[in-house]
Image 1: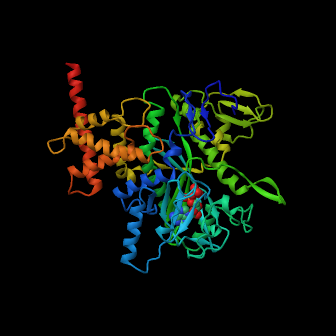
Image 2: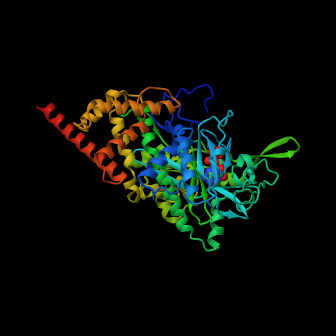
Image 3: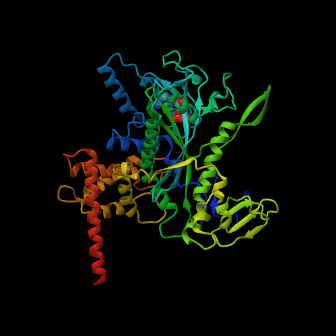
Length: 538
Ligand code: ADP
């Protein structure tokens, strides 16, 4: 820990909250620039909406959502139209203030007129979302799952999912929402930070009882009742990969702005907390993504009136320690070096008494590790030359650890998701025309150059219309933005891009309009580059 500032470069930087150190030029940082902003409720909703518009069937795991106040009238109209269509429809919605956490300011409504638009919490922008009324119950209680996901790299995309997670339980038996029970947070909200204050909260050291349990214990229970838990896991993996695919375009814009390509800088990785609800029919629903999930392995308990003590929580410890340990194993720079250099003396450390190797199995005695760390005298001994085989041999440091709890899901299953990565290509076009290093917004000249280089203007769409399109869209997005910097943000560019795609390929479905325009832009830019290279050579 460096409470007074750091002087020496490190291999791995573990920041508490967000990516904030601009003086790092090498090594690896445990946060991505812009992650906190990217997973805020409104930004996540916007990213998911774009993907739902493009691929409605693939993104049906995210509840229908509207952003307040900008989409209030859309929301009101939609609910009115649905009610007119079916008078027996009695929907429930959940309103969540943007940037809120731990259930802060969240409330349920039955009608758009119940939205609270005044008051300090309520006047904040928020997301209003379809409420999942029929969640899966265990012991008559609603619960959600916190799954830990390691985004190990953005380019190339590498994602790992922890094999176990935590289930956080409500503390009042669940009933479907009625006007009478809407405000009962212990029945409807699964947040630990809320339920801990209920008299019914049960701290348990066992993984399958109490108000916080392991996900594996729930899966075991479901499987013993005949549920298809293999399918459930596969659906959860899809949910995680698809959500990250929705977030990567925005993350790439932040990344190039903080760590410009070609300049020395660190690489990043990040542990994310995915909050997932299971429906009665065992479909996973994404509630939210946390950039800074709690890694506490203790819980607070009132040991006598008004006296609180931090006590160990074995359930948290079992899941969270494994996630951090395996993240460090996966990003271990020594491991990479060992692989890269294939050195004759791989640095394999084995903790064993140096004075006798007799504890080793016969085969390994003939081929001892290259470095031995004596667990008695703590001295390091150089051992005779080690074979390649030792890198994975049982006495490697990995051997002393349990098998990895983090399972790679991308690129392992990349093939089945590659068609969804359209927005990454739109972001690549956006980044290409950003021009000034360190910015996340496109100026009017950058937008004009994009149109010109991709030859998108013609007699029906003049450069004057291009300027109007830029001004209209940019002004609207900037009026809603938290940062008041001028210029076109990625989402505004996406809107302009969709608008151009619709104009050019009217008859096609949206995702084909967009992919056709991407292909056109990419091929024209490639041709232009080729031409420039030829001119440069001649
Ligand atoms: P916060 O960041 O404040 O925890 P969440 O989005 O996680 O906000 O919502 C808080 C809780 O509300 C969740 O843990 C879950 O129990 C419940 N919840 C959130 N969204 C929904 C939804 N669409 N349907 C049903 N329950 C929900």
